[in-house]
Amino acid sequence: MHKVLLHLDIPLFGKIVPFTIYSYGFLVALGFILGIWICWRDTRRSGVDGDVFLDQAFYVVIGSMIAARVLFIIVEWKQYAALPWYYVFHPFYGGIVFYGGFLGSFIAVWLFVRGRKDVTYFQMGDFMSAGAPLGHFLGRLGCFAVGCCWGSPAAEDFPLAVRFPPDTSGGGPPGLVPLHPTQLYEALGNLAIFFVLMFIRARKRFHGQVLMGYMILYAVLRFVLEFWRGDTERGYLIENVLTTSQAVAILVAAMAALFWVFRLRRAVTMLPAPGN
Image (cartoon, rainbow, N blue to C red; front, side, top):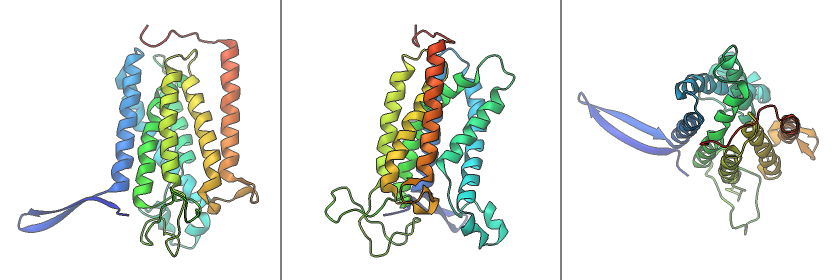
């Protein structure tokens, strides 16, 4: 398993300058770019100024990365408590948590649309959700490439089992034991969610429907994946029964489902199909 996607030694002013592109960083960055492009295209098709979304996307990227990092530090506080204080701000030590980034995106969108009259919060949430699963798909491929976020041990004869070298960022379990490639499970799940959201978007009846669909579908995906993640460091709400991530997934799905039913029953905003 290689972390490096491309390495070049470039001669410059009589010296050799190394130029390296890492798989994880490249795929995560590509995921952000592709996700933003899909969302920008969706705004244009809906008659909203695409520049408005691009302005908002800047705040979403910053807000999501900060929140994802902060939640990781909170979850892994025991690990950081044993280190010098400045490791909290070290950009290359530790990782990020998806639900933290999700919350950060919500806050960033709310701050951006506050006081605006050309776009609503839930309308912008729909735009943001359209491309998010596709970006997440590429991000999880990056996790697989670098060897982090691997799953629990699998049977020796399990056809999808993978083994990661000990020098991967995830640490690789001793003995190169076969593992569930939960990064790939989640990547494929996000790709499926993307196509379902495109179906919902083409038939949506109220602003926020795509966003709620995304929240429900990802929560279901994450709840199921937890059975193979083997991520015991994040803790359990009910010991050996319900993980913290599963509890969050249930809460997110329930809230989104209630909002969906409430908005649909009231039919606050009836929308024609995009393109009509």
